[in-house]
Structure formats: structure tokens, C-alpha cells
Image (tube, rainbow, N blue to C red; front, side, top):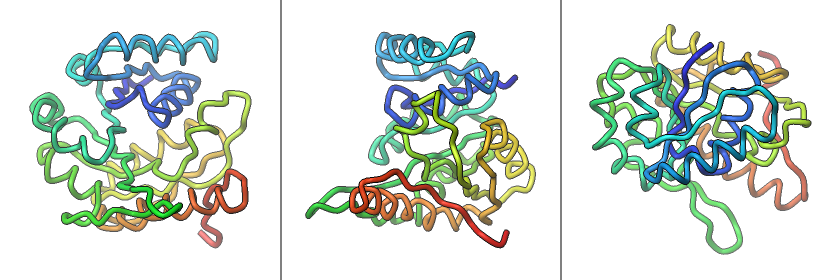
Length: 216
């Protein structure tokens, strides 16, 4: 069992991953600037599946009690949250699930990131932590439905083989999801941008699509 903090865990994607990791037997702490809001979100998730360990706390407390930190904040919140959390995360595995997106003219668009990607920016802001980027392409709606069996691949970007192994193990804890080594952190921009395409496809075809890499 791992202790996992999800920062920005009161949003749909964070709550969805909390549910799935809780079902997998991990202890999950939802972090928020507003502790009461985090506790309410944790209670909501805990009500969806019996026996799971999901609690709420401030961002700082969540990180302090965890060994793995998942960043699920909006892209514009990444730099601000790093100023308070960076000292607390040193040496802990950080997974960015952030996809910088904006909605305009009826379509979802990827936001240009000066550093290359949210994953690469995370490595700059948290220089003393091992970093991976993953989980950006999973539907929050699907994650939050415990009766739904998930299918598809989770692309993982990291410049460390040890980190790749750790995150692959986490992905495999969720039944029917397959971890895929997507190369170094510099590739995370392509995975993040793919999220915009998936959202637009889902809107166009009125469905919930996922990704799968054939031939690997």
C-alpha cells in the first residue's frame, strides 16, 4: 500500500484517480488550499466504494504524509503551488497529470508552454524530486464511475527508468489499464496535447474515447 497525495484533488480528475487508487488498496489524501473542501471531496469519494482509505487535508499536510505526490492543479496554478510545496516534496516521486488547455471558438486547444510542457515545467519547479508525467488522457467521468471497467493505455513520460517502473506499477494497479513507456519527460508535451484532441473527438462523436497504442 502506498500513501498518495493528490494536490488539486477536489477537481474531477483528482477525485477520479483517488477513487481508483483507493479501490486498488492505496491510502489517498486529497489536498486542497481549503481543508474543509478537501474533506468534503474525500467523503464523497469514500461513499462510492466500501472500505477505501481516502481522506482530505491541506496541501501541506497531504504532501507531508505521502510518499507519492500527484499534481492535479490547473496549469496556471502549478507555479504558485510549487512555492509552498517544493521544500516538502524533496525526494518524493511527483507525477504531473496536468494538461495545459484552453477552450475557444467551440474547441479545446493545447496551450503553448514556454518550458515545453507541464511535465518539463514540473521538473524545473521541483528540481530535487523524481518526476513523471502520466494519466492526462483518462476521462474523469469514467474514473468516477466505480462500476465502469476502464480500458486503454496510459502513456508515461520520465527520464528515469526507476521512476518509469514505479509509475507503471501504479497504472497496473488499476485493472485493464496498460502502462506504456512513452520516453523521456520531453515527450510529455505530445501526451498533454493529445488530451485536447480526445476532448474534441468526444464532443464530435458524443462518446468517451480512450487511447491505445497498437504494436507495442
